[in-house]
Each structure stands twice: as C-alpha cells, then as structure tokens.
Length: 208
Length: 269
Image (cartoon, rainbow over all chains, first blue to last red; front, top):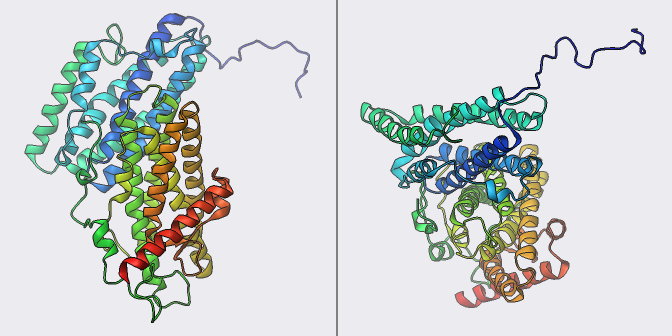
C-alpha cells in the first residue's frame, strides 16, 4: 500500500479540468434564466397538447416528456439563487421577442390532424437548439467554478438526446407521403427562421 | 393553442367509442341485484362469481380510459393557467409529474388489458373524469380531480389488487399495487394544494370541498363505490388516510355513496 503521508498533487494526472471559463456569474445566471423560461414554456405546451393528439403512443410519450422538461425547469429555478439571483422570477425571461414569437408559432398547431407540426416544432427545431445551447454552455463554462451548472446541463442533455430520438422516431412513423414530408419541412423552416432571428434560445452571441 | 378546452374536443383514434353518463347509467346490462330489487350497482369482483372475469376486464378498460383522461387533465392544468398566486410554479411542476405518472398508468393499463384478454376500444369511454378537469378555477380543479377522482382511483386499484390476490394473478396484483402508490401521492398532492391555496380564503375552500362532494357523489355511481357488502368497489379507508383524508372525510364519502345508491334505487322504482 502507498505511504499515506506522501504528498500527492491536488489534481490527479488524469484530471484535466481548467479554471478559466467564458461566462461570468452574471452571464451564467442570465443564460440559466433563459433556460428556465424555455423549459417552462415547453413543458406547458407538451402538457396542453396531450389532449389534442389522437395517436395513443404520441399521447403517452408527450405525457412522459412533459415531466422531464418540468424537472429541467426546476433544476434551473434552484440554480438561480446560487448564482446570486435571489429573485428567480426576475431572470426567468425569454432571451428576446423573437424567442417569444418562436414559442407562439410552435404552440399554434392545435387540431387533431396536426400532430406532425406539433412534433416537428419540438423535436426537429427546439430540442436540437436546446442541445446546441446546453452543449455550448457545457463546453465553455469554467469546469471548476461552475461545476453545479455543468452537472445540471449534463442531466438535461441526457434527457434531450433521449427525447429527441423518441420524437424523431414518432415523426418518421407518422410521415407516409411526399406531401407530409413537405408539410414537415415547411413547418420546420418557418420555425427555424424565427429562432435564427432570435439567435437561438439563449439569444445572440452563442450557438443554440 | 387555446386555453381551457371542452371534454367534447378530446382527441381519440377510431377505436374509441364515447358514451354519455346518461347512456352509461341507462345501460340495460345493469341487471337486477335481487329478485325483489330493480337494479344493482354493478357486477362484483369476487372470484366465485361467474361474471367476475368479464367485470374485471371491463374495469381494466375503464381504468385505462380514466388514466388517459387523468393524463390529459394534468397536462391541461400545466397549460391552462399562467404561473401566479393561483397556480404557483411548484403546483405546475406537480402536475407535470402527474403527467408522467398517468402516462405510465396508461402504459400499464394497456399491457394489463392484453394480459386479461381485452383490447383498446372493446368497451365504451365516458369522459366525465375529464369534465371535472375542465373547471376554470385551479383550486376546484385540483380538488375535484386529485381528491375526488384520484381518491376513487385509490378505491379502484385497491379493489383490483385484492382481486389479483384472490385469483392468484401476481401480474395484476403487482401492477395495481404500484399504481396504488402513485395515486396516494396524487391525492396527497391535491390535499396539500387545497390547504395551501385556500389558507386565507375559507369561502373558496368551502366551494372547493363542495365541488369535491359533487364529484364524489357522481363517482359513487349509484353505489358502485361504497362500503356496502355488494359494492363492486370498496372504499379503501387505510390508503385514503395515508393520502391525507381524515376519518371523518372518509366517512362522509361513505355516506355520499349510500345516498347516491338510495337515489338510484328510487329512480328505478
């Protein structure tokens, strides 16, 4: 056994975490507030859509995904005071008006025959943007000082990847004709354009 | 997507057949209980009764459609109300959690339906559960759904769990026991939110409890759920108390059920 009194380095040779990060406390808090706003709008929409989709498998999946995004919202809600924001509601805001417009457009489909549009908005536009925004944050923030945010980002990303796959498979199982391919693509393009205008879910200056 | 939809707008595939409460209660298959009586509350889940397997299948299908509506109701509560004093962020998180639980219950019910030999659409669907979930006041909605309807679910799951035990069906018993655990959580959620949101508003609390009484009586379905020997679904007193009901509140539901039964008997006389 190694001598317990022998000095060892504070960081093991395989631990290459770095101190510097791209985000200050305030910037991290601002992004986390945007994430919470987005996760809230998303879980509310998924919950509302459950009753409007006739496809039984989609209905049950949306119910499950509703909770996952609510849980993400709760993670971000709890992180805000730890980032010196003692009034979490103050930072629970959309990044800009285009992000609000995006959510308005994404939640517009309501009729039972619009399941493709509902799923495309979430799983082909919003969730890929969330994956990008969360990954951008994960890869750019300080690996030591912002470790609690990193942990939440990783939990959220695990869910996002899984849900994206679920949603994409549901979409593929619903699209049978060229007309439906065009419907899905047109709706995706319309929503993507709005979100690009807004610079993604966290606003301009980063990816996602 | 608009806020506050109607039960008539619920989206279903072509297997589902919807009937009204009136049609359900006037179903001629509600055969007499005794030679001298004109009606009975419904078939009993006793293994020695020849109609028990069919009754269990029908109940499983009713559980399945009830779970779909419970999922839809919890989902609409996430959507219908803005975060505010009336529907705090934490309440919406609870409703989202309930969505996941109800989605799982739908999955379990479909698989149990296969296990018991029935299939989606074999029995008609009545959407009275979702109607209670359309109340525009979040406190009344929570009380009607989470205390009255989820309370009924406790009674139903306990009855089915005991039927699983009595018929030596470990799959049924196992699944019902898990769902029963979730329902106790949902009822407790409803009781906690009722208390918190009406802490300084006794008049609103009284209205919410009155709404619960109406729903409880409706769901006693002429004595279908109650404390009588021949009630197909028995009041699960122990689990209700675990979920936050006081013994007096459970007794009140028992009385409502007796009242509902007496009124139904009088109606067919």
